[in-house]
Image 1 (cartoon, rainbow, N blue to C red):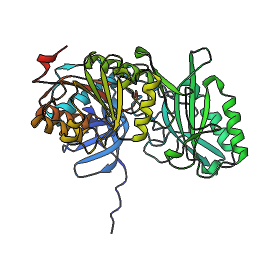
Image 2 (image 1 turned 180 degrees about the horizontal axis):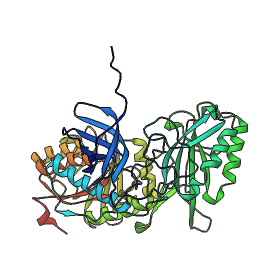
Image 3 (image 1 turned 90 degrees about the horizontal axis):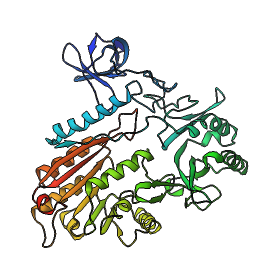
Image 4 (image 1 turned 90 degrees about the vertical axis):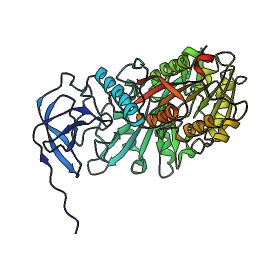
Amino acid sequence: MRRAAAPPSASDWLQVESLDLEGQGVAHDAQGKVVFIEGALAGETVRALIQRRKNAWEQGELCELARPSPLRVQPACAHFGLHRGACGGCKVQHLEPSAQVAVKQRALEDNLAHLAKVRAEQILRPIEGPAWAYRHRARLSVRHVAAKGVVLVGFHERQSRYVADMASCAILPAGVSRLLLPLRGLIGSLQTRDRLPQIELAVGERQMPDGSYGPSTALVLRHLVPLPPADVQQLEGFAAAQQAIGLQWWLQPKGPDTVHRLGGHGEAGLDLVYRLPEFGVVMPFKPTDFTQVNAGINSVMVGRAVRLLQPQPTERVIDWFCGLGNFSLALARSAAAVLGVEGSAALVERAQGNAALNACAQRTSFVERNLFEMSAERLMADGHADKWLVDPPREGALALCKALADAVGAPVPGWKPPRRIVYVSCNPATLARDAGLLVHQAGYRCTHAGVVNMFPHTAHVESMAVFEHQDLEHAHRP
């Protein structure tokens, strides 16, 4: 017979020691058991309402605060809360923004030290920017609550599958935040309102007739049944009334491959782009393409990566996990040749198109490779490159780093390892794992590391690290 879970109960007073990667306070009780506390900050004395109990740890919510941290602040968003039922889009609005960055920097350093036994020789200054209205990508859930006669549009509630009752959002651009209530009214008026589970948001820019750029906002409506003409007409009328933000509807009847623009041919053209002004790059994208959530921070991050990599007019660079060409096209402004490598033939084709649009085609080429099944032989077959840019998904670049370590141990004639690697990561644990391989098996030093605050008010840690090959760096340093 299954034992019933113990009811929630308040803990004794606890001293919070740190924050974990989920933004929870970490403490130890009198018996030494770890206690994770939602809403608690480092240095605080608290009591927690314990809701989960395991042999080695417990988890709960802050229920009483005896000594608050001096870094605790009043959240700016009316929908943020530390209790179940509050909006779950943000984790740490109650922590002063610069302190959030310091926590992320510590998380990066701790992962490198403990998981990889690696210490960066120099800590980079964090890349950070505005803490509000930064989120240009989001997936908003939609739910028609028939019993209350309302439609909810927003993020999920904290620790819940329910949709938060949101009238605004402080991390979305102001024009999109103002749309939340009108969207609720619009969806509620549609015949298919019970069959519309989500709206995906992508904010970019569009080219105006005079050559300047204005706002462009794409909403991808997931619909489980065909939309009747009356619903389509209402969507079109809604978009027409929101020209100040360049609103365009896209429809997704099934999987991601079915996404198409309402009334169009499914191509963004220059109606939805982001730019890298430092490099004169314009990047058309579709609203379901992977692009960074924070366009301003992405532009700064690309600039730093290029400066750290220092591509020279005589050098060949490989951009692994190149996507649409976010780094490749910027690198092509100064390198002799850039090879972009991606796991999708469709992305390779899109990257080639972006290179042509930005007059980079002569210096760039793109190929499809399964980067999670790399080998030393496959890696060396793509030829020697002076430098690498690596920007993997959360899973990291384990196969690529293993292949590099194997190739360093048994190189073919004419191939040498890259003397410098810039690794951009969205997961400090997989970065640390791969850094351990590069340093302890492939002969590299970690010369720089630092965080990129791509997601303010969340526990997400974006980071960047630089590796120099110890046998090559002095002989070839530019």
